[in-house]
Length: 373
Ligand code: GN1
Ligand code: MG
Image (cartoon, rainbow, N blue to C red):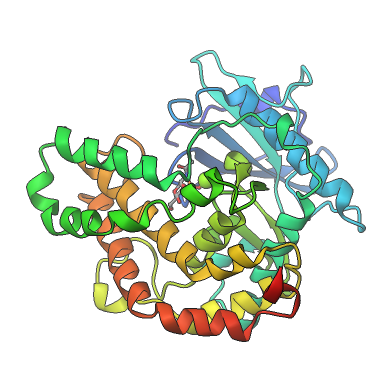
């Protein structure tokens, strides 16, 4: 199995009988870390399963600080959950030495989580509108649960992660350098992305001058990072807490709808299948606004723009990586990053054509608390 190091099994405090059959499967939905499910049995024959991840330390330069962030955040969420919360947050398993990360002989950083039984991510769920309502509510609950979290305890593991102005500057550099020599394949996408430069400061500038509040946010809220129960379809928790950092509530709302509002996956090649679903936006918003009494009027007024901006940002990141030669996102087919970029920029175009309607939907779903403050 690509990248899997069986030594991890001996180095974490897991309840798994290593003399019995163990099934290791790679989960390839993420673009950054390597992820494996490890299933076996305990000494007394009970099923036992864990998630192991090899952290991409080219991207996360300080995996130990990253894991400290995750431990603090998961503990905070678990403590805030009245039901005790074994499934309301990820559970980090410690190494034999009591650390939250294990460094292998070949210099990789590994972590281990308890597997969430009978769960699946929202992406694969054949999602109905009721599930979107629940996902919206789950996002607002997640943001609320971190309202009293002391942001100064967190290391900003990827500075400027959603600074779209900086992302745009990096995109211009990628075009200028054309390291991969692929620029001629991507000219229409590059031109379209450049035409949208005026929108890049929408959130970044308002955070800088205080018109938008800085909060603690997830920063990678695509639907595949939301786990639900297979039977009840209830939302369990957000996973992939690598990017929990100070940020804007709009990043999380926008990114969730970037993925959840699309009619297709982010690497669908047939663009006739890719459009923005107002019904998904409406349902997600219903759930989100049901508890989002913490949002300011400025935040609410920019909800549609946040979806456009997060999709645009993702599009130019894929495009930049295509031009750089696929050095950041893992790719699984030729021109994968160009396909993703085309998809995201196509979606942006569709969203822009629907923006007035999206504002109407926001107005219809805005309770009294969001109208005046
Ligand atoms: C990456 O690795 P994954 O799939 O959780 C990326 C996100 C992008 C996403 C696009 C640390 O997330 O920012 O939105 O791909 N994560 C990082 O699918 O760059
Ligand atoms: Mg991620």
